[in-house]
Image (cartoon, rainbow, N blue to C red; front, top):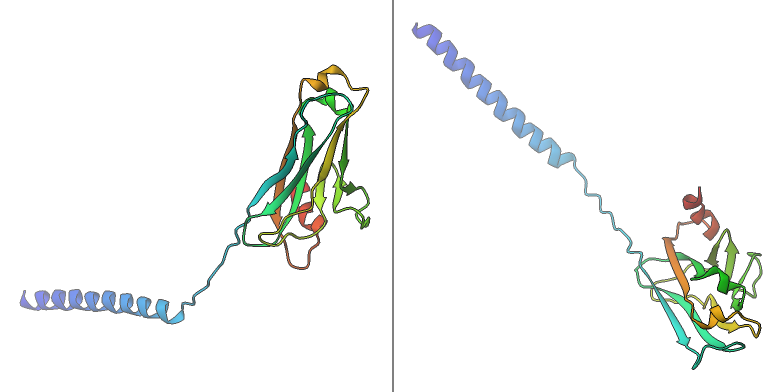
Length: 178
């Protein structure tokens, strides 16, 4: 019986040694072979601003200043696109809004490119930079319906996407359009 007790004790001691040594080995190989991988995330944030001088009175033929633009408030370069809509579609036909855009991307006289309901700012916007205004004035036609004079809103919705190395603006936005 003493012999079996001795053998059992030896087996338990050997199991303990094996367990401890494998734990120490695992710990040692983990820290010996690990590498630090630092990932820095960009902060993409935009703010819609505007210079707005409302008319003293809403009346036919009046023109007023409204210059919406976007500021990059993040810490990475980004591309901007805007959607502009009038609160009442019946009012839209009685307004002239001079958009700073073209349907030709290569038209250098315009800062914005219009495609599929969005106005795309042609340049990457650096942190703390502003876009050029998407439009500058709004004019109510002399022939406008009285509905226009009751008031309307022009909604500006803006989105941004971080720039991608070696990818142009439309190629970068295409990831979201498909």
